[in-house]
Length: 347
Image (tube, rainbow, N blue to C red; front, side, top):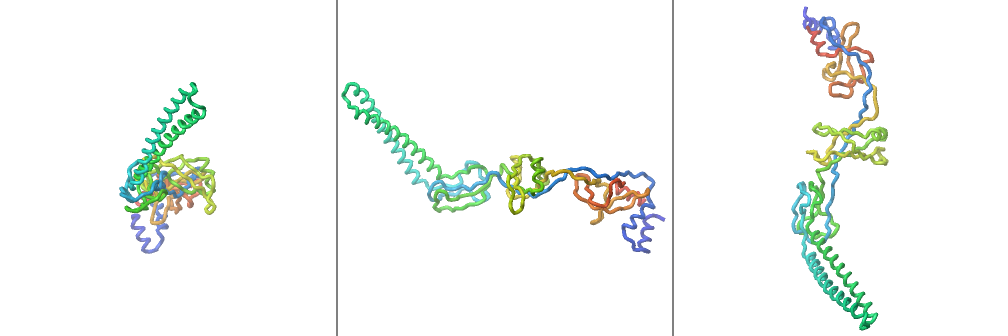
């Protein structure tokens, strides 16, 4: 009688569990050799996985540096702005008038200084001849020095007035994205009033909070692996671990620097941060040795020359293996290819 016929007959006459029926498979095992592996504990790194959030290294709120009325807003929320671009424009009539007045004061100071320097030169030629008193000579020297300083002060006022004119065109301090706008066209602004907020997409970093029990291990081995939403992995050793813990969560804030120019990264995104915190002893078996049936995971355990289905509990998944939490003991022998055993049994 064939194997499938036996199983069908047993299920009709005795409603046994699937696990019991599969254990009968050893009676029909093929004579072909089945490759086995011996399960033994291994020392593996203990990986700690935490949630981390991306943030921009450069983020700023641009404020007004002069007073005036908003004439034009060139960029709005969600617009991409190049570095140095004019974000908005403010009226410059008052600033232009201040610049003109400063230039006039500078011209007047130059003329007065030129006259004072010439008078001092004439007095210096006449003083040795006794035609000029000591008091007049001292006054001429003081006037020459005073007018020279007045020229420097007038030049400084021109520089200040030029800066005030430049402030009427607010420029982007870096290339990035506008996130918030605080003013409208036609509003009057004063120095210090917020205008626009934004962040740079060129340089990002991840921020996580490391529990107190793992912080010493991270400081001893500052190497973190980040997993992005597209499963792309990034390794970074450029960490900034805060020297104080949060009093509520008892965790240390940690900043993880990312390479520049990574695409499709925005502040607020969540990523996985993983680092090594010591060693752990565990048993690891290949994926080929495991049979998955709904929520049940099992392996073929060799006992007295036969292979019996043995349920196990799995832990972390690796590239081609799983950690075993329970169901196996050190020294157990299991089939390396569980489905090959199943096929041989069904022959």
